[in-house]
Image 1 (cartoon, rainbow, N blue to C red):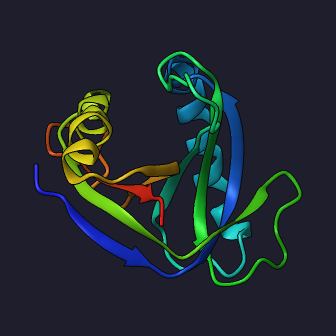
Image 2: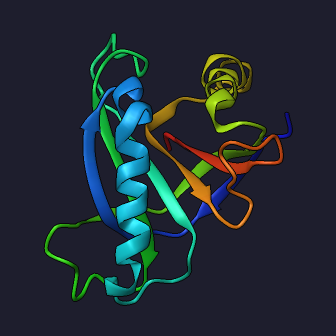
Length: 159
């Protein structure tokens, strides 16, 4: 798996916040909120593009396990400005940060293997520490049920 470190400027997102475990999110909440976000995208002013982001924000307490503990999922779009936000959506500022990034190729249901590699092996081998969030970019290559699916994964790194 090809990984690289990139630095991204700060950005803003607008979308739906969901508190759930991975299993709860994947079982029903992801699809229902994704469909709702796509349906409402015309109401999100200042949207930069049509790429959906899945931002995942984790608690910073020791012993947190993303596979069993609930955490924050935000299905969203990147925006230029935080104005005229639909009332049922949240805004979030993402600071400038360095990330390890790679592209998950294959079924979305197998993306856990990509995260296991980054968090379990790559970060340790590189001697780097993750920040408490990551995100995925779902663009025109996003075909969750297809082996041709591609999702760009970004794991924030502590400075």
